[in-house]
Image (cartoon, rainbow, N blue to C red):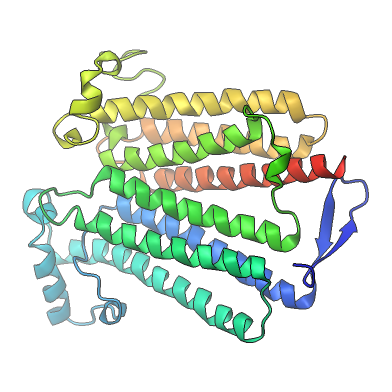
Amino acid sequence: MENLIEEKPLGNTQFCAVEVPKNNKFILQWLWAGLVLVLIQIILGGITRLTGSGLSITRWDIITGIWYPLNEEQWTHYFDLYKQTPQYTKVNAWMDLERFKFIFFWEYFHRLWARLMGLVFIVPLSYFLFKRLLSKQLKVKVLVIFILAIVVASLGWIMVASGLVNYPWVNAYKLSFHLSVAVLLLVYIYTSILFAEGNQIKWNEFKTVINLPVIFSLLIFLQIYLGGVMAGMKAALVSPEWPLLLGQWLPKEIFQFSNYSNFLFSEYEISHTAPVIIQFFHRVIAYLIFILFLLIIYKYHSKFRSTLYLILFLVVAQILLGIFTLINSHGSVPLWLGSLHQLTGIVLLLASINFLSIVSNATSSAK
């Protein structure tokens, strides 16, 4: 990055910002565009899940799948394919063509957006490579982004395939892996942006094993993973109440350890036990995140007050959204609440990554 950025001090701040030359501004705009597109794609994935649309398209046709059905014959063709799935025969046999068009739209749009992301990634990248505008470090980061994107797409199809054979829904864990790697892709793009700006996270400044900001970010990522499992198991529906769970503070299912092997992974479809366990730990992690952030405020408030207040707002908003989503999940999860809950969680994770950058750069500059 030696030829791309020039460091200049920023007044009274404790670390350096950068003045980005014109060529690098194009690269930053491209990375930011990618970040926004991936974020939207994750939200679209959540909407696809909440509307029960994910299995409406049973094939992955990279080229011909671009075209939206335009006549009755094409619609009937896609509907006939869907009728062969366990989801239709076991759950949605009541569905008519008009309702099918609704769920088809969301899955189609989710896949179309993935194709748009590919174009936005490949076309500018070809130009940057032709003009030799990328440093060696950025080339490596772009390669990692490309690999992660391929993994996300592959996991997406593996997830869909899991709901086309025996079960009427996709596997909850495969769904959550798909979500988690997509979030990991988003985070990596954001850290690449920080790198291009000269504000990359200096991991050597986090020397202690017990480091609060790092643990905070990891817990949020774990919580997003558990949120994906919650969605896959429809765990909110088994006990849409708070603060109690099944009318108790500590349900007996939590202490029946045989449940963890018998029902948690392989047989969660036939019992409410696994959703109860997942919902319990999703709540516990939320409480831990809140307590941990109070400790972070205590430790860092004198130096990073405004940033911490912003993150505190996100933490509280996310907890409240989680509670409101849960208590309104009678029969189904409310679409707008579930989507907003997912979005806020991801924004909170990015804010925690940004805080890591701020703390590490401030610590480095103070030496």
